[in-house]
Length: 264
Ligand SMILES: NC(=O)c1ccc[n+]([C@@H]2O[C@H](COP(=O)([O-])OP(=O)(O)OC[C@H]3O[C@@H](n4cnc5c(N)ncnc54)[C@H](O)[C@@H]3O)[C@@H](O)[C@H]2O)c1
Image (cartoon, helix red, strand yellow):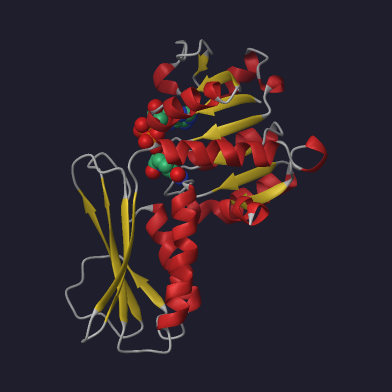
C-alpha cells in the first residue's frame, strides 16, 4: 500500500518503520512540525493536506494513517475524506465530533476507521470486560470501577481506551448507568461507575477494571509493553480498510470491532 502518515510523532514514526517491514511504502507525511523535512524512509513531509495537493501527491495514496492531536484530527479526517483518501485514525479526544465527521465522510463517499486503541490485546480485553460485566450485573454486592495509568506527556484524560471500555461495560449492565471520571468529593451513587486516571513517568498504558464485593475482588488488567502493538493494529486496520472486497477500499465509518469481527 501507498501510505500517507498524518502526524509524524511517536506513533507516526513507529508506523513508518513497521509499514516498511511489511512491504508498504510511505508516499508522504503531513506534520507542521516537520514541514519540508524527510521521513526516515525518505518521504517528504508537508505542512498540511493542502500542501500535499500542491505537490500533486494526494492522488497516489491508498490510505492515510492519522495520529495527531485532539484539536486537529476532525479537520484532517474531513480534508482527507474530501480527497477520497480512506483514513485510519487513532487520535483520541475528538470523538465529540464523531457524528459530524461521519456525516462528512459518508457524504464524500469515502471511509474512516477509528479506534481509541488499536492493539489486538486491548480489543480482546474489551470483549472479556463485556462478558465480565454481564456476569456481574445480577450480583449487586459486586461494585464496579477502575483506573488507567499513562505516561506524563499524554494531553488528555481519561484515555480514549478508558472511555470505550467504560461505555462497553455500561452497555452490559442494568444497575450501572453513568460514568464518572472526575475526582469525587462525595460517595459515588449506586448507578455510577467511577473510573480514575493517573499520569506518571513513561507508562505506555495500563487499564484495569475491578469488581469489588465485601468478600473479595475480581480484577482484570491490560498492560501495554510499548507502542508497537498499537502501530501493528493500526496497519492491519489500514489494510482491511484500503483492501476491502474485490481489492477496493471499503466505504463508510468503521471501528476496530469490524476488523476483529471479520477475523472471528
Ligand atoms: N488509538 C491508539 O491505538 C493510540 C495509540 C497511541 C496514541 N494514540 C493517540 O494518538 C495521538 C498521537 O499520539 P502520539 O503519541 O504519536 O503523539 P505525538 O505528540 O508524539 O505526535 C503527534 C504529532 O502530530 C503532529 N501534528 C500536530 N498537528 C498536526 C496537524 N494539523 N496535521 C498533522 N500533524 C499534526 C505533531 O507535530 C506531532 O508530531 C494522541 O491523540 C494519542 O492519544 C492513540
